[in-house]
Image 1 (tube, helix red, strand yellow):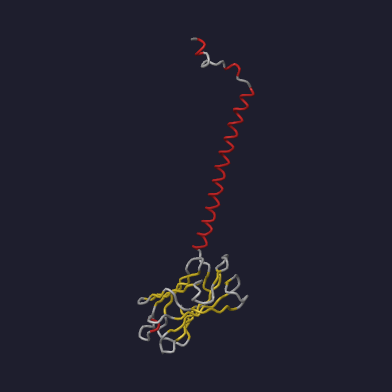
Image 2 (tube, rainbow, N blue to C red):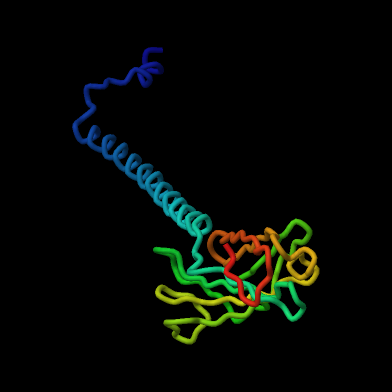
Length: 196
């Protein structure tokens, strides 16, 4: 009987330094593999988080800003406003913005709102003023002038409601926050008006 149970009662005196080194090495290898996996996952997560933060900053900061006054022109019909002209430039520290050829491209959308009308996409035409490298991209030190057509049926296109009318334009580049422009027409419609 003693012989059967003797295999379960091993003598530990023979546990050598070599065996200890092998066990310790196994623990170190397992720990190294585990730490590599954890660090790799951390790096991937931090890269994704950085990209998300960068994209969020691009979307929440306005990439364009007003560079000058908002000018309105009287229409062919007396006491109506047919066109509004705004000049835009890049906001400080922003990346270039593709303006596109015109409103059909959809690279830049201009919306209109007054107390009776909302128009999601207005027609507009662009002209670069000053520095221009002949492409459709607004870059640092360039300015673009947008001539925006007032929507039919809006208060500005009605001679009875065009004076003292508050309206809002929203310039929406493909990347970046909306640039809101709220203005009020004067008490008398002139051929050319600087809107405040």
